[in-house]
Length: 179
Image 1: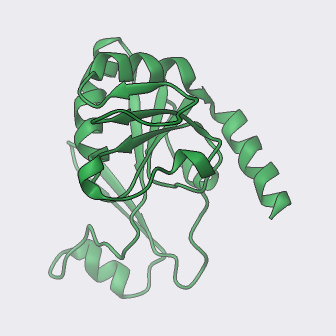
Image 2: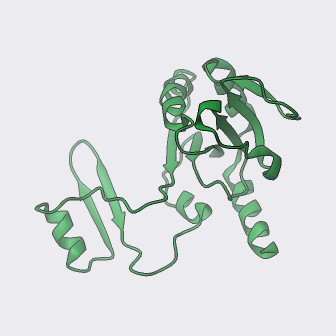
Image 3: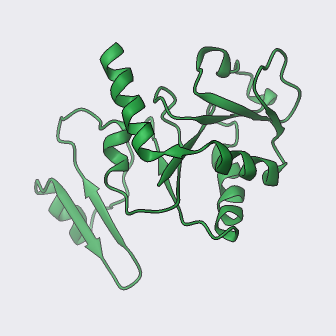
């Protein structure tokens, strides 16, 4: 398994771009999984469902299975949020894991930037950003800058710059030791 990420401010178009990238990666014969970070509380379960009742009753994990899919929900119940490398360990093996968010984790990332969002670039302060996908020129960029609509070039870069998952985990451990 190899891993690479998308980072950028809210509204920059990370998810929109990822929805265009995933089919191209699959078209190359790669199996792809994603990990998405949410900065707010979220719920995939709803009142009235049995799985919701199990979780509210106190179950730490609830696994729901059907002929089409399964979903595992894990309640942290006050425990700290898991780090990216801990979450990656839960994934079934695939060729490529694309991480959306997790700005502070030390894996290679593509910064998605739109000028209209009005936020500064992240790359000057994050040396793990390996390229920028932007809707305009990027002054003072010492890394590749790709047009936000050049999906093929973005896919090529993601495949080229993804690192083995073991390396991402080692980087995370090394960064934790420095903090």
